Picture 1 (cartoon, rainbow, N blue to C red):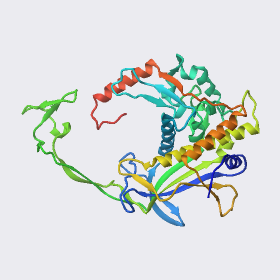
Picture 2 (cartoon, rainbow, N blue to C red):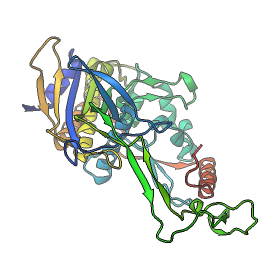
Picture 3 (cartoon, one colour):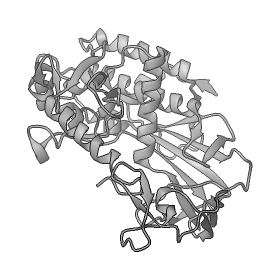
Picture 4 (cartoon, helix red, strand yellow):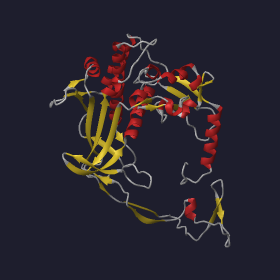
Length: 395
């Protein structure tokens, strides 16, 4: 099995190969048969479905969605940038420090914002004193399209990998759309849903009949014998919780599997003009950079581990391997290994090659500051949250 090099990557992107694919089996860190907890969705349910595996219908459960995996891959890139392991990948940072928040936010980057460079957080921030989308940098995004992906390549190339819809920009619903080129998902195979128990024994033995009156600041006082607005001590976190059994209580699996696919045709749809002119060589160089960046994100995320949430730590049963889907019907697919260190070197080589064709991306983070309106809205939201019961919804 070979390590992937720039020549092979560039050839795959330029020619007719369909995809790079990785399929990794995982087991719970506690060992085979240990319970894991999938994410819950509205109505406290798991995302369960039958899938066709080896010609048979098999009950499966979603452990990490495509959207969640995209976020984890972006987070892996951000951690590598913060650590200095990865250098000069374009990113925009909104700095929320020093504005007097109840709960400090710190920095929100284009790798952390839900809608990437098109997110409302960036839209409602300032660059050099101007609203970001009205600044020179921001206005360049108005021209972004499949035929002109250069503005995004320079400012936020990850948007070309993980997908983007610029619906919050000046064009609204007509804003540019870019499909996901990199898709990752983790499922649990042959899933058996279990139950979960819960209880709490209060060492003080508080009785429900000992009513209290809750105050707006979160404190309380004893309720009078005839008070009508008294509530149980459980409302202020005292008292027992009766033992209960919850039907959504994790799952046992035969195994979990992560499937990662990098679509090369999706990258080939993109053009990268400079001064209004495109060349096949520049387009190929830019697409190779994006492919290398996608593989780097996947390698970094894999090496960061698969701690998806509480009680859902997974462990790969083998090293991450990549297959190149290059010739239809070919039985013995070419396989590669790629560590994060190798991937970063590959990315650096691809970036340097693209620069020779006139494509130079933003190497220093772009600094944005939140607008006064955004700061005021955030402060009001935090004030409301501080006065709202913990079990209340955020809506």
